[in-house]
Structures are given as structure tokens and as C-alpha cells.
Length: 86
Image 1 (cartoon, rainbow, N blue to C red):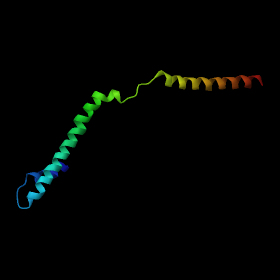
Image 2: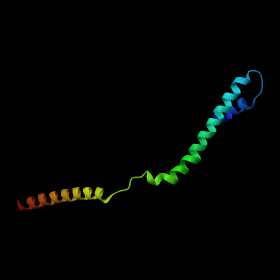
Image 3: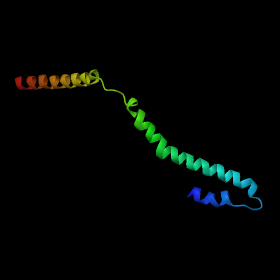
Image 4: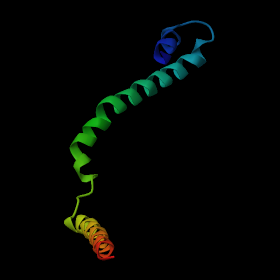
């Protein structure tokens, strides 16, 4: 909508338009450039190089979690054994 509002100012000719017309052209160029970058260039770059942004998961990270779960379950089972004995 901003581009449509600037379009008449960019193509108009008349008194006083010598100052506003270059400004309107620059604003329209910025709007079109940012739209093209957002919709075309950035997704293409992300599709090409996005796999390098995601860290690779190592098995050591899951071993630590797995060891924590085993420790918790072992302590629960020992509590259950103590509770059964009493």
C-alpha cells in the first residue's frame, strides 16, 4: 500500500515535484528491494546454507540425559525396596 501511495508522486511532473520525485523513487526502490530480499533471496540462502546453522546432535548429550534418567529410576526403585521391607 505504501508503494501505491508513492507511485503517483514518483511519476508526476509539475511545479515543486523536482524535490519530492527523487525521494519517492528512492522510497519505492527500497520497498521493492526489501520485498525481494525478504521473499526471494533470504529463503534461497537459508535453503542453501541452513543445514550449517543447525548444530549436530552428539550421542554424548543423550547419554547424560539417559544417565540422569537411570539414576532417578534407580533411586526410586531403591526407595520402593526400602518401603517394602518396612
